[in-house]
Image (cartoon, rainbow, N blue to C red; front, side, top):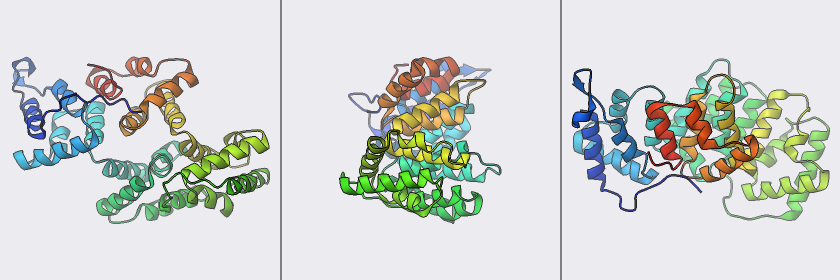
Length: 328
């Protein structure tokens, strides 16, 4: 359900590396800028913007072998602005990318719920295997665990919930026990009715059960108690915890809904939050951007593609639209 478009016949990694090297070195006469040969950004987009994760990993490794330089570092020196950020995030291995995004979020002194989105997305909108890979990458990159950094930088009760979420290793097969779903829906309802969102039972259910089991629990909650659980948690007393739990529930139940909202919030209103927009599209282009596109229309009664085109420009716009399946 992703929107990434890969050519029917994919060039070899060596051919792609050669095209990238020529793009950086400004071989094409059309790239003469200010008396020097400039980077061919279009060629960079055509190569990297149309390759899968595994293909990009091979290109990155092969580029290092062929030219004895890091592809990421060369991209960093040749590109600029939001275009550079987007291409580098796309070219990094997803676990490293998400580990670095989590670290950037945790470095912020005054963190709001918005800054914690990426951690919830890694924990609740990704596979258990990806979460484990992110945790391993985080340790390797920063010499401490993701859980440690959350505990030391995020205030309670948010820190406790986030640390539990990233520490979990859920079963990833479709196994559902409806009696458990009904029982735990009742437990969640009692906690919400008592306005005790930070109780251990709520965290245990959300951080331990597999995603299929939790979706069944959320369905039972709505069937037995009238409202979706994310509606009932509003007004329970702690606005930040309510917002975080709503994000957790959406990422588990329908991640496309969460990412449609992230994109909408990044575009609608004054200015554009390019970092959030980039993260949403880059991280989901191979997963569910088709669903996100449909959910965006349902939420805002407008086209996601038109919204991106209207709020971005230049090579940054072209790159995002390439990831959304457009022919540039």
